[in-house]
Image 1 (cartoon, one colour):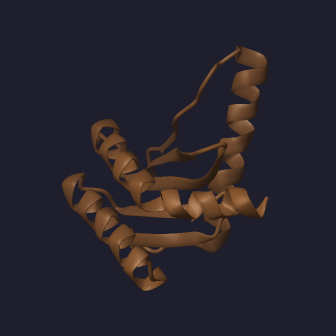
Image 2 (tube, rainbow, N blue to C red):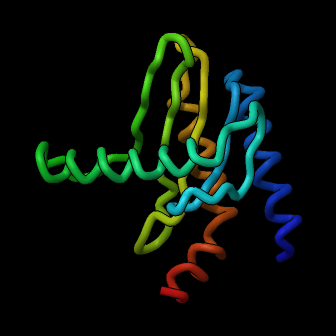
Length: 135
């Protein structure tokens, strides 16, 4: 499987998601904040790393302090900047990838991002196996 083909397929899924929403931006990144593929408005690299770090912090506290069993989404709303949705792409033993979507404040997202998460997990499964083997 070539990386160009993989990245192209993931980008196509993200573009379709943006059109369906409509959403301003969608991207897939690693837990370290490295962008795998993106579509829509540009986003600063430091913002991507901040999203994954924020997700980890919120989930850790939700499990520890609120006794949550599983968190599958963190959503942030800034009326001036819009909504940012962060969803883990659960892959085997870990969560090496994240979906980040930016939307206007009043746009719905859950059904579309759930469908997209399923599609992305199918594309990313071979790469998650490589991540687990490298650990």
